[in-house]
Length: 263
Length: 284
Ligand SMILES: Nc1ncnc2c1ncn2[C@@H]1O[C@H](COP(=O)(O)OP(=O)(O)OP(=O)(O)O)[C@@H](O)[C@H]1O
Ligand SMILES: [Mg+2]
Image 1 (cartoon, rainbow over the protein chains, first blue to last red):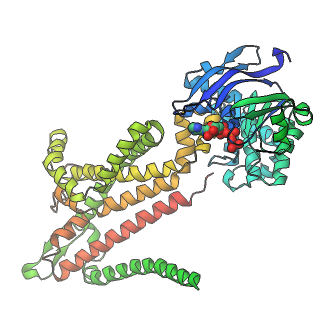
Image 2 (cartoon, chains in turn yellow, blue):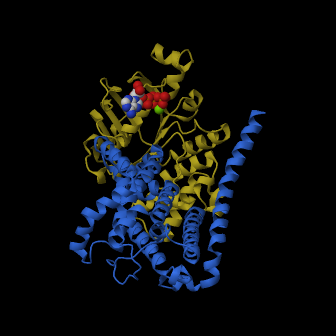
Image 3 (spheres, rainbow over the protein chains, first blue to last red):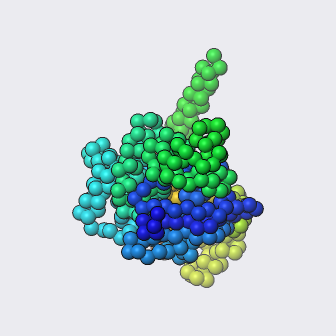
C-alpha cells in the first residue's frame, strides 16, 4: 500500500476520555484506503465508536478529552493535515464536511425531507434554489430513496420508516460529497430488508467516498468490506484484508472472535 | 378487573377537569347576567366604575381593567420571552456544568418565590428605579409589567430548559457532523425539537401573567384611570376584583362577575389559539 491511495491514517493514536484514568484507545496505527470499505469489529466496549468519533473530532463537543499521536487526512489536492491540530470552529466545520458520520439510530432533523438533505448544503453556503434541488435529487437517487420520496419532499422526515430515515441520513451526508463517511453500526436498529438496502447502498457509494464502518455483524463485515480491523480492549489487535482476517487470521484472538467463541 | 377500574378512574379524572371548566363558566355567566342585561357590549368600552347612591344601580364598565390587564401582560411577555429563551439556551448549550448547575438551582428557587414578595420588592425597590428612568410616580403599568416579567422569567426559563434538554444528543451530534455551528444547531435542531415545550412554557407564563393578582396589586396603582403613557397608574381585572369584592353588592357584584367572565374567556381564547396555532402547524 503506498501513501498515495490513503485517505486517512492514524499513527500511534491514543485517546483518553475526560476524567478517565486509563486511555480508551492505545497507540492505534490504522491506514484508511481511498474508495475502499474498512470495517471495524470487536467486542462491546473495545473502543470502536471512540475511534470512529475521533476521526471527525465529534468528541470535541464535550470538554476534557485528550488525544495523542496523529490522525492524518489526505486531501484530494495531495496535501495532508493532522486533524488533531485543528482548534477553530471553522476548521472543525470544514473537517466534518469532509468526514461525514452516520449514527446507529437514524437521526432525521425535525424538518422536511427536502430540507434534511439540503441542510448541509445550505450550511456550506449553497443558496441557489435550482442547484439545491439538483443536488438533493442526486443525493436521494444516490441513496436509492428518490422513488419513495419524490412525491413527498415537502413532508416531515419524521414520518418515514426507520430504514427510509437511515437512507435519508446517508443521502444527507453524501450530498456534501465528503471524502470519508464514518458509519457507527448503521443497521443495528433496522430490519433485515432495510439492512440489505443500506448494505447495497454502502457498496455503491464507495466509488465516490471512502467508508469506515463499525459493525457487530460478522457477515456484514465480510460481505461488505475490503479491509477489516479487529479491536480488543482499546488495542488494534489485527488489521488486514478482509479475506485474510476471516479466512486466515494471524491472531488466535481474532479467530476466536470471528468464529463466535467470545464477544 | 383492575385494568377496568383504572380505566374508569382515569376516564373520570379526565372528564372531571372538563366539567370543572364548564361549571366555572356557567357560574360566572349566571352571576354576570344582571350586568350583562344592564350594560350589554357597552360594558367593554365604558370607562366609569361608579356605584350609584345608596348602592343602588350605578355605572360600571370594564374598559380600564381590561386594557390594564392586556397591556401589563403584553409588556411582561415582550420582556420575558426573549430573556427566558436566552437563559434556557445558555444553560443547556453554552454554560459549562460548573456554571449551569448553580444558575439552574437559583432559577428554580426564583420560580418558587411567592408573588407577594415580588410585589413588595417591586414596590419598595423597583418602582423608584422605574420612576427615575422613565418618570411617572413609580407605580403604574410599566412597573407592573416589568415586575411581572421578572416573575415569569424563571418559570419560563426552567420549563424551556427542561424541554431543550430532551433533544437527543445524537441529533445534535448529527447536525454538528454536517458542519453546523453551535448557533445553527440551536436554531435548526434544538428549537424545532423542543418547540412544544417552548410554546407550553409561553402559554403557562401567559396564563400566569394574565391572572396575577398580588404582585400587580402592589405595583399597578389600583386606580380607575385610563392609561395615556406606559408609566400611568391604572388597574387590572384581578386587582379590581380583589380590591372591591368585600364591599360590592348587586349590580357592582354582577359587573365583577362579568369582568371575571371576560378574563376567563380572554385567557381561554389566547391560550387555546396559541396552542392550536403553534402546535397544530406541522413541520413543512
Ligand atoms: N463518554 C465517555 N466517558 C468515559 N468513558 C467512555 C465514554 N464513552 C465510552 N467510554 C468508555 O470507552 C470504552 C470504549 O467505548 P466505545 O463506546 O468506544 O466502545 P464500542 O467498541 O463502540 O462498544 P459497542 O460495541 O458497545 O458500541 C469503554 O470502556 C467505555 O466504557
Ligand atoms: Mg459503539
